[in-house]
Amino acid sequence: MAWMKEMPANPVVAVAGATGAVGQEFLRVLHDVDFPASEVRALASARSAGKKVPFAGCGLVPAGDLVVQEMTPTAFEGVDIALFSAGGSVSKEMRDAVVAAGAVMIDNSSAFRMDEDVPLVVPEVNPKDVAWHSGVIANPNCSTIQMVVALKPLYDLSPIKRVVVSTYQAASGAGAPAMAELYDQTRAFLDGTPEDELVIDAFAHRISFNCIPHIDVFLDDGSTKEEWKMVVETKKIMGDEDIQVSATCVRVPVLRCHGEAINVEFADEVTVDAARTALEAAPGVVVMDDTNNKVYPMPGLLAGTDGTFIGRLRQDPTVPHGIAFWNVADQIRKGAALNAVQIAQLLLP
Image: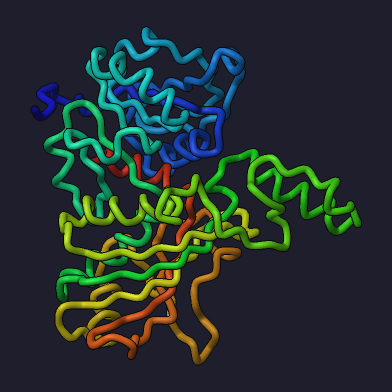
């Protein structure tokens, strides 16, 4: 059953998990897009209650520090939109309270993504899916988001049969502590700290000067849950269960921005020129592809940007109708906070 409550022009917005990396980015994005909020509430765990987080203001909310409130079921009374990045268990715990308060939960965790009654939305790809939500809309996995933003204009040229993707995922995907670990571990490694004395908490192995082909837990078939997410989420977002996706997800020593090497096989012929034209015209996509001048997207230079950047666009000669390209996007921006706020914008009257 679709949501029946009418969204006010100046909604009250709650940011759940406001002290985390994505929560902080929620606040920056709300300012950057000048979201027309009448109030912004910063919510977090009891241990963060009373802290102040800076906010540059948006809509009717002036710039100034927000005092963090403890996230309890009653904290959502009067809220219209709740932006969640507090972990799947917290999202599940608070779902009923948020919906009962009449708010729409836009959840960044994986808790509800594959639920049949929860839309999984990337605004550049399937914006109309927000119409059938029943109080919860899921934000997809970061690596899925940037891939489908690029796939949608290509799919419009010809149905996609198969996608092979290898990801180069930044530390930011594992949160603020993981980013700090990359900094600290790199410093310690360069200072000559022995391998067995390096602090390893956020990752399965040392992340400094290393690549780890292991994100999330391993499944029975040898893939990881992160790779599984890219498979099933792509099918749901694109609305096509026949798309075959093979993913290998790797954590790399980059602070922000995920990279993805993507090979696409189409049902019909798609030329490189046609693909380039479609991508250049697509919302949210920035084509950055001039190999003669060594121009291509690089994670180290694109932190803090909103686009999905495409380069190294070329034919894949190993399949009848194939295109290969390189894709970079800021995991915290488009891969999390920006996508969620864009969903919130779709809910506005």
